[in-house]
Length: 167
Image (cartoon, rainbow, N blue to C red; front, side, top):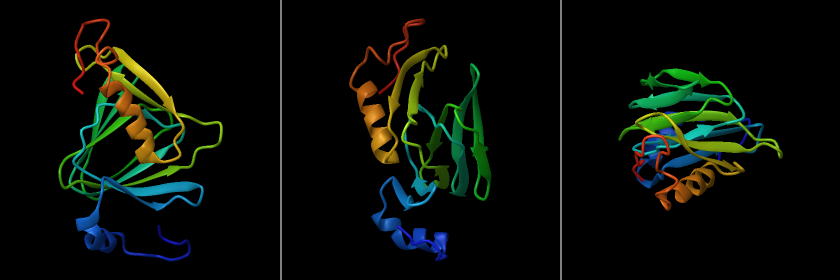
């Protein structure tokens, strides 16, 4: 992580570390904010519900930010240089293609706050499963949430139409 009160070149840092990169790398987390860079590809099916706002800045490639507006499934397509402010409590699923790099800023959670992960039927939109987690580490929270639904086909099966969400 980078120290406070010191600037750095984000693009140069990414370029210098491309070969040793995982899915996500935290830049700051020792302030009121968590800032990280994440890259594609990913294959998320979950929708994350964050108790605070999130800022997405697309650095390279394209981000398809799926989100729910009531019962409507919407997609915001972010191209390099574009930013998106996602309000708190909006179910969203950031889906990145290969070569996609996104800078994300969100606020730290308070001790009483929890994040939710929700899965919806891709055929009829019915909610399949909802899980609440403590969001101390973004990578751990996503992993914890997805392992449970991937391991149980009943949780991925729609009670309304019978469609099974691919693991």
